[in-house]
Length: 379
Image (cartoon, rainbow, N blue to C red; front, side):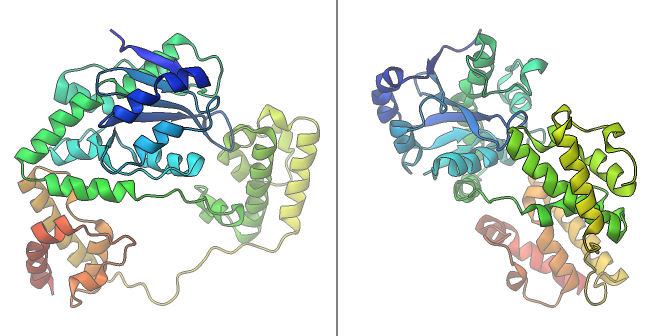
């Protein structure tokens, strides 16, 4: 049976829940964005669960001033309970300038309980024996549509319906395992995450899979097509993949003499004048200076000995993970192991270059001595 929810899409409805938001000691939270259908992406729906069980579906397109919700979400004494909240924290910062005061991420809590499959549906099934219905047609739904159909609203409400119970279950086990300080540190790091603008097109085009395999002249065409696609996406308000697929850009870059209208993966919005603009972008790419792939400077530091050291350190991490019944990825950051493999005589803390640091205090306190012993064995 679906949880009860209220759609908050006007000022009168918003005013009616202000007192409940102000009184809430914690909030369950999720959001939906429209990035699969619109460009630039924006947050199109906010789901807020109250401790008493009521769920508020807030329409930020109709109520841009979040008022009492913003006050509650930024209060460090009132945690926001969410699941796999990295995107949510960034989106709140990007779209509303909101900095989460405190949070409990039930995916992180489940991971510290030894869970490996961390999707919300998987964790609810494993921990609470709850099946969360996820109709396929709603998994890529356009959340900026208005009005939203009832089944879409119920789907959205389901993402916060069980978060209070899931937090009680997972955090309770984390405490029994003596890992609450670990979870608190991870959640504090997540709350401090901020949205970062994507790189400009003249840099981002290198991330297209296959860009490295092109020659320098072909890569210049790809760069021009990538910049063209970004402009067209903003012009149309549709995501870049609706304009030109990556495969289409690569096909044109490889054979720029072909008729682009016959290339698969070109969106219908490029008919007529759009196709003329595409042809102009191809000409610009052909006329541009070749685009070489950056070459690494100096010698390759990964000698056979360094690779052997890395394998030994990864074996240490696997052994520790098995003993703790945790996924190896949460035990110790791979980037730090790589630095240690390249510089085994360095003091381990001096190689922690992350910002924030790769290595958490709970990792140093719990596993630091074991790591130092592992490094001594390979030095």
